[in-house]
Image 1 (cartoon, rainbow, N blue to C red):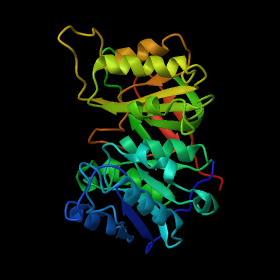
Image 2 (cartoon, rainbow, N blue to C red; image 1 turned 90 degrees about the vertical axis):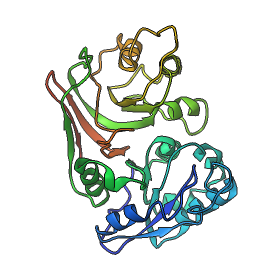
Image 3 (cartoon, rainbow, N blue to C red; image 1 turned 30 degrees about the horizontal axis):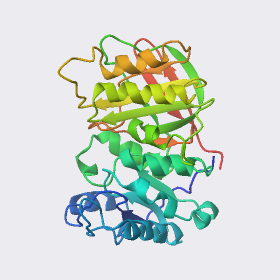
Image 4 (tube, one colour; image 1 turned 180 degrees about the vertical axis):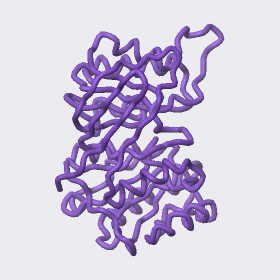
Length: 305
């Protein structure tokens, strides 16, 4: 997996919205906060654009992202907002120049479409907080984004919080892949679906019914995406819903039930996803995962590129 070049002071970072509409005014505080790192943000034409819930038409969002991909002066692309809509433009994008000169793609949630598609091109991406509201996130969130973009080594440690504690102890070393569970599920069968064999899978989600979580985990399982993992990392399963007749299990218990027959290490309540403590994950990077009874630890190994 190729790691894009580290950012340097003075670099230009393009800001786009591949999904929901967002105004430059809403992003002012985030822009000021991030530019204190010594980089300069450049608005794409999808910022302030509007077509119903989208940041402009599919054509506007696709051409905006394409221009940022092809512009050699833009050293990274930060998605301003999630929502829904990235899948509508992914097949309109040409990654020819990007493959020759990779740059960091930053975002999470709906941006999982880009993470997965680009993973299949052999290039690492950054699963991290969207630009909107980054200044309101935890200090650890901000630190991991900065460290990842500027090439600093870092690790993430946390204590297990789920009750009962469903973590399965163990140690694994390999590439970490994944993102939003709903998006991974929706990409199955397409050329953006990822191969999880021999890898550590990360999943998170927001605002889903519990039976939807079960449906999606069953789909990943039937597609063989859980069979040959070497580890599973479960981030925030936030604001889940239930029906009038209860499903009978939490989201974490549903996930554990889908993988209980396997022997790889599993950790829950990992600090990443739709949570305040949304720490950055370099997808496609080799990591060491250590799960003990008292601690979860993910160590990002230095890129060889």
